[in-house]
Length: 130
Image 1: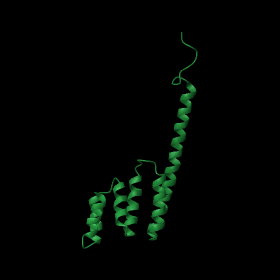
Image 2 (image 1 turned 180 degrees about the horizontal axis):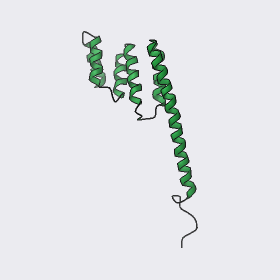
Image 3 (image 1 turned 60 degrees about the horizontal axis):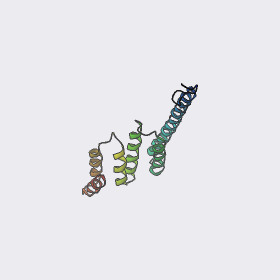
Image 4 (image 1 turned 120 degrees about the horizontal axis):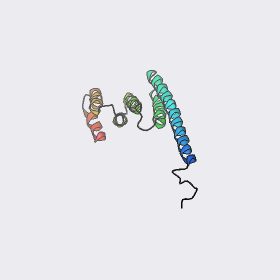
């Protein structure tokens, strides 16, 4: 004989709570994404002013707030890589570029090598990548 109690999966309140939690998570993610975009845009403005240290700080904050796997994440990583490159922090530039899904590491190494006529920089960066 069945009791009048509903199992956890059949309880209507449980389903509503899950939907509410899911909606709250989606709203939180939206807020984090919006804030991340704002930080990234501020970083872009600082890059134009050649204030690379400050720009990098904004890009780092944008990266922290960006939802994992979001399509804009690679753009933030590419901006970080450019910032590091302009600060002559080549190993950090390669590392940030490696995180950017859309950046071809051969292009990054080629750009770095073009700045280092002796080729030593290319060898050091290749070591970081491998």
